[in-house]
Image (cartoon, rainbow, N blue to C red; front, side, top):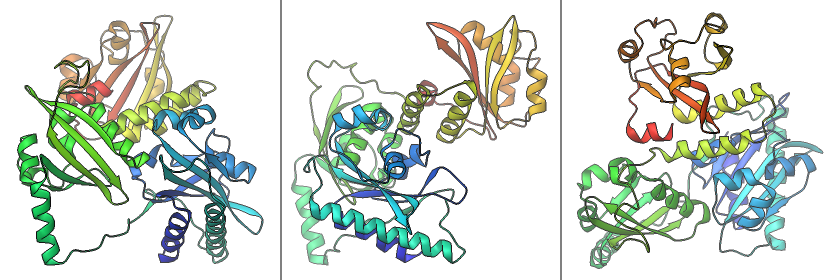
Length: 437
């Protein structure tokens, strides 16, 4: 990809009045759409839709399959027509998806996003800008293919940099600093990926941390008491809807802080003041530790909605492996169940078939981690093989992995199977991650 792609993508986003977009390509001899470029959309939010089948119940799939522009005008319409993305991103935003064509052939798809406070219909000028942008992108795809270098998916989609703001003069910078310091409470800035780019001394004092430790960090990683789903959820709501958001969170032991988030194309401005618990909330309303890595939770929600449409066990295995392993940083998995007193390997990813064949059909025993979890319903987390060996002395280290999580699969209140997740390197399982798992 060169600057021509960047320019074309930036022009269609700007010309349509959208705040961001996703560009998909339909590679040769591949029936799926692959995400190749993002603009104004953090990659972690776009990650669940890196690959979209034309048959998926998704706006871009409908647009490509039916060769028409698809418009989703509000949250209710999204939930009604496309429950999968509505479940993963339950926020107020507008969306258009359109096919990218050239020479009468579908080359890919384009998704554009607008804030939740805009009109619920595209204007004629906006529609013209979307259609012109798709034509331009289609021509670029055709030219690339004709030259023998078709646009193909890579390990990570290209992220178009947001427009840079105007650099203040030295005098303006001094005046701005004084202005911010005079505001009540504290202030900080987040980039589009959630990292702190700036924080005032007053804000650092309110959250109880050193400014040097905060700049460059994600708030919910630098401040454990902010590692609760509500915090990252409101951050993502601000990014996706481009509307102000607010929440109150408890800084232990008894200090409530109120946060106001104001997003734009470059990031989020945050105002922090002392606050009171939300209506009806006691001091236990928000736990000081919760499911870590909200990205994992979003992948889990996306997986849950996808599995409701799965047909057959192998599709369940494939969907789980495709979506869970990258989100969790794991390299392998095994899905197990019990049958007539024996362990059955339902499916696996990242392991040799010969190794799985040796375990498939062995008698259930408390000495086998997967079987033990099915019997007890209690998950096991092993950061090293030494920990695994302490719990299961008969276990032989033959899979080449360094850490494992063994999780019960519960249905109707009882374990019916287990899921083994494996990591190539030693992996600590902090409380937040264990809760998410």
